[in-house]
Amino acid sequence: MLTPRELQRRAETFAVDVVTVCRGLPPTPEGRNIRDQLGRAATGVAANYRATCRARSRAEFVAKLGLVIEEADESHMWLGMLIRLQLASGPEVTRLLDEADQLVAIFVASRRTASRSRR
Image (cartoon, rainbow, N blue to C red; front, side):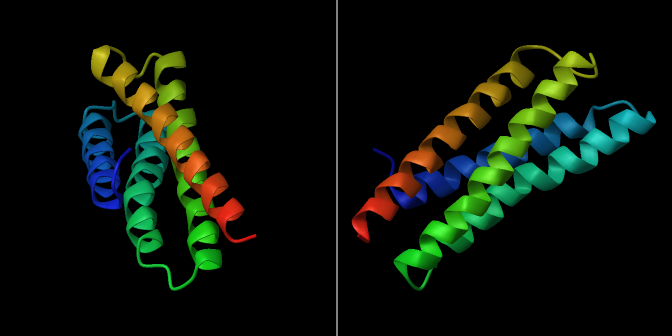
């Protein structure tokens, strides 16, 4: 079980690693578009999870986790798009795709637990 601080570090590492991959994307229109969208989504995971950790109530925590889930799922979609369009490949992109999937699962489970706890 990850602590909130460990999960925050994991989300930040994910964001940094994704931005690093984005730097290597081609300067084509689709490369620029995906770089911008993916970069925003991945950094949104880290930023929104940080805000989630500072929620003032359980209801606010659950709502903010919803944003984190959306950003992690969007990151997953854009990473998959990179592979399908052959704009990036290799073990690092595959690892990040898996990490995005794991982060979605972790945050969904957290939201489910937090939602149950408030009933």
